[in-house]
Image (cartoon, rainbow, N blue to C red):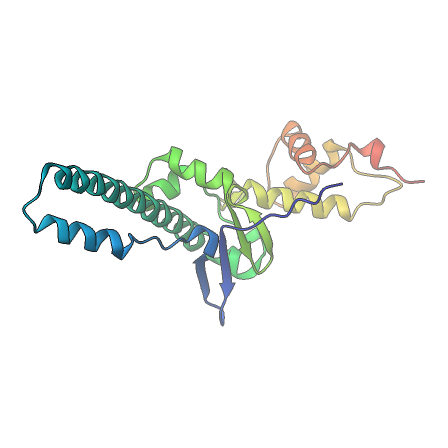
Length: 218
């Protein structure tokens, strides 16, 4: 059996009730052009050049320009990654400060794309492929995104909050008489979450919780 370890791309630390974000070292490469090549270009550039020297100068310049382009591309990528995660951290500050799922705000890709002025597709690539280490565990960034739903009192909550409440209700049930999806729907409505039975079933399945008859314990 092979163990697969997740290496986070970011780390969020709580420093005296203030969150700090860092881009992890393997993702934060500091590249520079060798002084040897820069000096060589300057030296050759100031001379009157033979055909061979011109060819050599052109070759070196082409390679240095390619290196500069590559370094700029890497720096741009790092800036994009950091700006995206910073916007997510600021948006979900209360949740990341406490680890309380009920503090997770509804958030869609468009919310972050507008904050950092990037395409939704760019935010999606970061969210679907990058991990962040927090004081409460390491998570795929995608897990911080969720649709919204309006409670009976008008408050807007995230679907992840509803799943947390649903799991709490199921965890507290009498296992000899587990709650049906119909009854779970009623219990959620009592708490102000007016969702349909089929939605409850969908959330239960996403939580990998089996139906009532399979949860029954004698």
